[in-house]
Picture 1 (cartoon, helix red, strand yellow):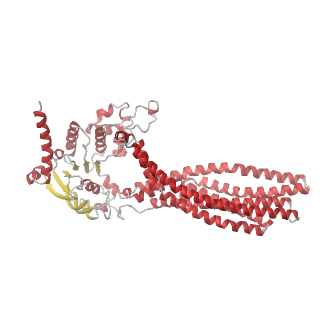
Picture 2 (tube, rainbow, N blue to C red; picture 1 turned 135 degrees about the horizontal axis):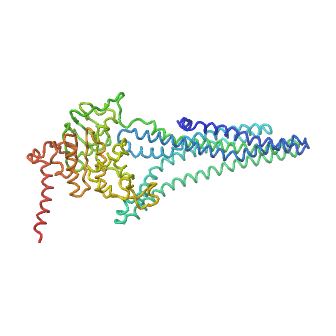
Picture 3 (cartoon, rainbow, N blue to C red; picture 1 turned 180 degrees about the vertical axis):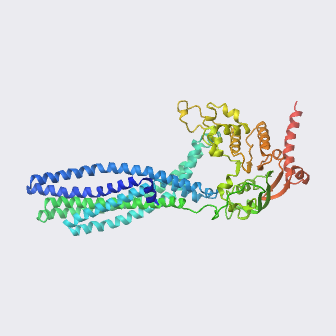
Length: 599
């Protein structure tokens, strides 16, 4: 996969790197042989023309040897840029194709995902490392031939001495890859604490509560834990590689002593000694480079395996072999005996829920925290699948539908909506990316959400960046123009984002006014009520006054629908809904009575 990605990204650069590897393998061997020839011709007083030719060849080989690393470095950087871009595109494309939220709530997957992000340079590194290893092997072959010419015995000794180096380096390579994965959770936690310390929206609370020192301590503890693991491996590498370097020095020193003695006895010429010294150094260098490249390649493969696992991993939710397109909603949505829990051994969030959401009607879900309301919403969007039972769209199991086509028919305001560090217009426009530049639709959605006047009054109007983290190009001249909205403004903007998806079959409103003041809440609910008329909608709110006009109110408790009916029906039933409604109403009336009685 790594080679294929690199080839698709820039096959021309791969070919140039291959040529550079061949030339890089031949050049140092040529330098060694040409050096021998020059020395022997000088000693023997050979013809000047031959000597000049050999010297010229030696000079050219030296130039190639000196300049090739710079070209090789440039080509590797170029390949890394191209291959990384392709790898990033594939990685995020694969993650984007995950249907639900299951993977994003699994720490093991998140650790693997972080490793996959780290491996985005893997394709370029693998190809460059492979060609580098091939170059070292070719150079090794040339130097070994040279060494065999001088002394077959010494050639065998040098090769045998390299075996423990190869074994040790491969073992260290696996340890390095294992360490990277082992400390990944520590690095993620360190990043979490670091962001809390640096994030603007956390600054007021961390300072008011005086927890910056606490968070800093946690961050440094994670760093120290990771550093301790790295230090232990570094010490092991120091001991192993130091011993191996000593072995290589002993072999080279012994070979030099033998060559000098052989030259004194007349068995070797001065050029042969130079060739032997160059070949021995070349063999050891090539062996060291080859082993280094192979172990680095091995480490890259181990890390890249996390990338491969993410990119080629199975879907998080099953997809039908021939999924159906979600049809326009004509009858309604039905949950039949739905059971769901977030983990196999966790508590049930939904326990046998049976509920019908009629088409063209407003259905409200109410209940205490943890009763299963938001979980039910996630199942409607098919962010999860029920463990038992099923959810039906006009009688069709959601698992038979194409997820993208289903979501095209849904719009929503989630309780934990996203505050994008984009412009005001883009924050609304992403509700329908096909119209992200349609100013008329964006302003219409903002007016319906009651936030148009405030956005228009921003320093750059709708083009104002809603962030104090980044700058747009326009802001560089005046970096004070970025704006941070209040919580209520953000919430109305999120409602406007949902309005961008006008005409969808189902509107989901999960606490759409929780951060608003009383006047804004009234206006937004009045607007939503007008918008919901004749449309299929599901509304969740803890403020029961805002749901009393819903056509159907379903009361949930401990993952079960315990009451269902209109506001009048449920008040007459004198059950959980009536109890909660009267608690809230009494609270408001008591506050009003207290205020009126005050002098």
